[in-house]
Length: 279
Image (cartoon, rainbow, N blue to C red; front, side, top):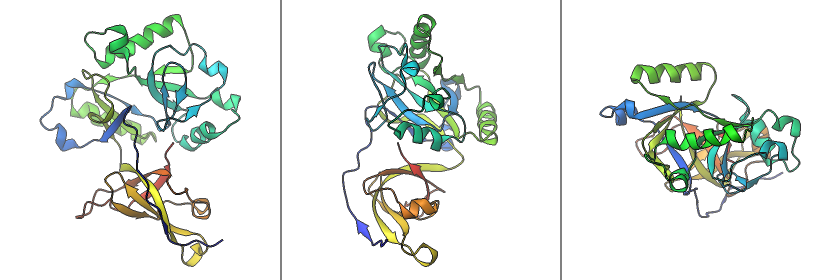
């Protein structure tokens, strides 16, 4: 198999109709009241958007769980995460992509809801805060139970120590991190400065636009992915790629997630490492 440098530019489209998290910056909270925020565990699963009729990924691709999983899903929209357990992203990702559902594996999946996007308009909620929106789903499930739908607990933050202890406990137990949200805000569409992710590392998304040729033991494979970041910068990502990724790399146009350690003086991701294909 021969690989060569290939660059192909295409439009980089991100979901703008759903809530997207911003990286937590401690400095941004120095003059803010943490009591206005809630925290929850950030689950490393596959985003699931329920529009009242069908379940889709953040890229608007239809997800087809077995009928028993979908029983009593509500007639209103939900936003959540399809999840199995910590450190099982590859398993849930593979299940979502599979045409023929593995019913036994779906029995281990839960749909973890963190918001009811249209609740304020549909149910005339006042105030339109996160707690009231989630109560809409809670009341619905009391009359229409579904064991696979879970509401992610939203814990009011008491102070910085409370947040740090919660975060450290999750990371110590191999969780991905913490989501911090301003509880009084309505559901936001697009990248939000009031909905934040706190993780042991920075992560971001980019679009694969090409490859570099591998050298040495990677001869006849790819050496690195050439990617276009959200803000249009071009970067190379070689670290984190497994042998199977180098032999069968993500196709041109694929959105991937990578982690990095801050930014260089040129505002480029420092030490980018491939994590996964973003569903």
